[in-house]
Amino acid sequence: METVKITNLSKKFRRYHQKSSNIKYAVLNLFKGFGSSRHEDFYALKHINLSVQQGETVGIIGENGSGKSTLLKLIARILFPDEGTIETKGKIATLIELGAGFHDELSGRENIYVNASLLGFKKKEIDDKIDEIIEFSGLKHFIDNPIKTYSSGMYLRLGFSIAINVNPDILLIDEILAVGDENFQKKCFERIEEFKDKGKTILIVSHDLNVIERMCDRVILIDNGQQFSKQDPVEAISEYHKRLFQKRKQALRLGPDKTAVETSGEMRTLTATQFNRWGSREAEITSVKFFDDQGNETYDFRTRDHLKIRMDYHAKKLIKKPVFGIAVYTEDGVLLTGPNTRTGDCDIDVIQGQGSVEYVMESVPFLPASYLFTVSIYDHSLRHAYDHLEKCLVFNVVESRKVKDKFGTLHIPAQWRHVKKGKPEPR
Ligand SMILES: Nc1ncnc2c1ncn2[C@@H]1O[C@H](COP(=O)(O)OP(=O)(O)O)[C@@H](O)[C@H]1O
Ligand SMILES: [Mg+2]
Image (cartoon, rainbow, N blue to C red; front, side, top):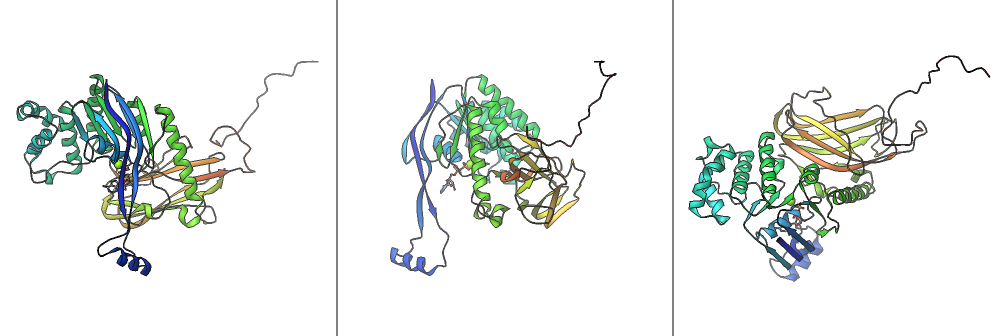
């Protein structure tokens, strides 16, 4: 049975431009009439087609701003299409934004009633469920406090507990599993598995491609509002990396100043591309730059070169024991290495204000190819992300005369030896 049917769906948004000090626009705006500002319509989604059968788990992947959340909001009827249709069968529960649909002044308990009734449940049905919901959330001692006193993790627990325990037919999940502690995440995944076993339908957006590959029967890749036609999880994820890679490469071609990831408030103002970024942002990565042994900024290296990466940060408040990490991936998204300051015995006591962290490779171990690079700041337990910039830039390794290795990805510093046994055979 088909539970979600999307036909030729398009959604437009209006983009307003920043006020311009440019006199020409000021004059043009005058002629357009008082109060009019410069804007344009753009398609956040274009010609999306999707048919989901009951019991299927479908993943939605794509870069930041590609239209994933918009798609889920359309299915949940929080937004409405400009073109095309969406048909759904059964009750829909959504975990779309942290605390969406919650009322700050009400208690956790009251919010459960409000939220579940919005999902179409009667008071009697909620009465029967409420103990289970509270139990699952682990918020028993806080459930009668107003939820404005909750942390973001507590919001998440409450929202997820409601969505998963009201027994919907279709569950929509947006990035939500990124927050919360490991135990709670584990509980959530178990519930989602049970949910799958019961033959329910799930649509899930996650930047965690391992989760997507593990959970999903099919994967929709959205790139700039448009859908990639193949839906096999492995194919879609590999296409995602391929496209990501091409975009990062184009960003590098913009020239030295634009190559590094620079952040000033809005990251996207400084790079031509966007990438997935998450975290609570009490501390932020403000710039990432690569240097050669002469201290020149570059993104082209040879195997066995010296490579220095400098990450500048800004901590808006005092943060104890932060952990800085990097990761290097191949073009297909295979993780080659993921060191951090904690495993690298570089304990950082506190950070506050600005500073930088450097990672130096004395000898680049990668063979000629291009590589994707990730950088992050986590708390000491590595569970809470302050800032995570996923696959945000590309660097290249080119042919080196020093290294003749050709096969594979890595150049491993090692020696060959030939050991002769016994005398040579007489002729
Ligand atoms: N309510 C809105 N008004 C205007 N533009 C929006 C609105 N919501 C999203 N957008 C824009 O639509 C595009 C897709 O957004 P979104 O669906 O949130 O992407 P994703 O979830 O893939 O990161 C982005 O360019 C975003 O800025
Ligand atoms: Mg989103």
